[in-house]
Image (cartoon, rainbow, N blue to C red; front, side, top):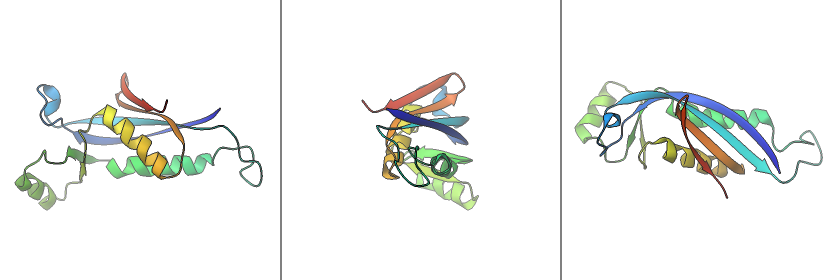
Length: 140
C-alpha cells in the first residue's frame, strides 16, 4: 500500500451548542488538518508515472477545503437565533453553517468525506484543535 500525507490549517471560532462547560462559549483554534490518502498501485505511464497523484493537486485541494473555513465563525445548524445571524451578517462577519456539531471528531469525518467527493482515496484524516489534541477518522 502506498500513502501520501499532507497538511494545512485554518483559524476559526466555534462553540458547542448544548454543551455544559467552557466550550459552550465562542472560542477559536488554529485547526490543523492532516490528510493521508492511499493506493495499492502507482500510475504506470505518462507524466504521473510512479505517483499516486500529483502532490500539488492534493495540497491545492486540501488548502481549498481549509480556506473555506478560515477566519470564520463555524456554527451548527439551529444553534444561533435568526436575529443573531442577521446581526452577524449585517456586520459582514464570515459565518459558516455546518450540519454537525463542530467538534474535531466531526471535522475529521467531514474532511474525509469531502476528499472522497473530490476523487481521492483517503485513508486517515487527523484534525487538531490544539498542538496536543486531535481527533482521527480513518477507513478500516
